[in-house]
Image (cartoon, rainbow, N blue to C red; front, side, top):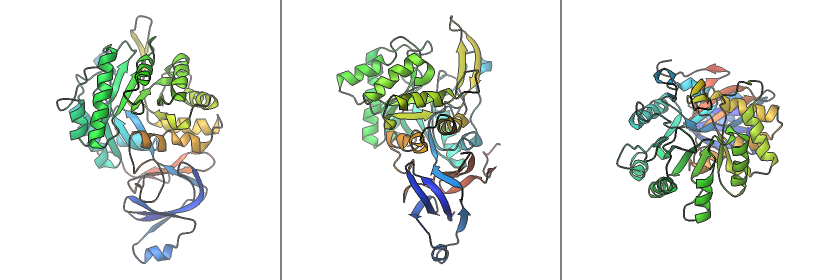
Length: 390
């Protein structure tokens, strides 16, 4: 598909001003102040999209989705359903990374890989983690290193659970071995080799990660602890960890019953106000994961389901309610995850990158259009591509 987006205010995520963008096939071919449409129409037939009063930003990268569903902590009836294509695209996400959670018995990595390939066939870019909550990690081949090297879509390990009553309670040495194997697999395959860490509310908190930092043998730049905003205590610990160079991920989905206040946007503002470097913060949705509430005896008493749309809602709330800079906030779901996960063609609007783009209404920041790999999946607020069984 070939088209030209004219008169958009472009954030790449840095603010570039009003630009015209030329898309040929699935790539951004030119970014210019005033494109000559006739010149391009001599070569190919181009559709012209007038983006006056629109903002153009990179498609979002969501590093934590449960493609197959999650949950199960309340018995079989509490298993959450598989994700569908429009669940993802209506949240502005064009690249998604899938994982297993607590249940790696009735859900498995082969099925996760198949689901990732299905979503890619339907129109977005997908990757997955090997492993699940537990250590030793379950894998497709004989180990973590082998999975990352041999399977194209596997770019890391996760979500490994620590400091949580649902984790396998690994020792520090067992945990460190997962980091090492993931790192080596990434090096040998030119992949990021990121370990996604599910953080519970245990007293040791980020203790394992601080220990890795202190030992100085393994890099902390391929370790991404998520759910850092699950409590004020953990957020404060994460704040100091990020100031020391660590990466932290905030979960945009919430089990909080107060729907009037976006807690993730509030946490993001808190981090920025406390001078945490923006390049060390990401946001992810935990989509289709269960968001259980437990009583003091660790018995589940309620549950919600994570949604991709929570990322988009957090971006809007951060800018419109908490008055954060749009360029800064966008980094958390565009250029930051693209750098961390070594996705060189993603996360930044620049020439020769993949045409993964979002058009937003300028004043309201409401979603207008989603373009993934040069194809409109949502156009003028209408879904143009649905999943196979939707």
